[in-house]
Image (cartoon, rainbow, N blue to C red):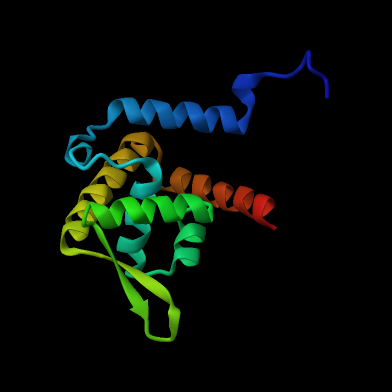
Length: 146
């Protein structure tokens, strides 16, 4: 690699991190700050709210967490009364995870936050540009997962 031609600000990972930090500075998190969620817990709630139920392994995959991160998030959210574990009717050794009524409200707050963040970040793009952006993200995702 030609380190003389290297430009940090032209790398995808640097740009994504910078955009994430800029969005974080612009968005009002007060609705969910009262719950004191970390990123893994927030993604856990988002996944369970969106999909309705999941096993620990499914949750870890969908929330992009390793199994130990998922287990910690689940434990913390059960203690907070946000999620509930129920025995899996198909496998007595396993359990399924669901949002509680309180968890449904937190999920609603998180969805509002996600929508706000996306609208803020994408407001100057046309519909076609948004479609192109997400198509490109899809291609990058394929590169990295296949």
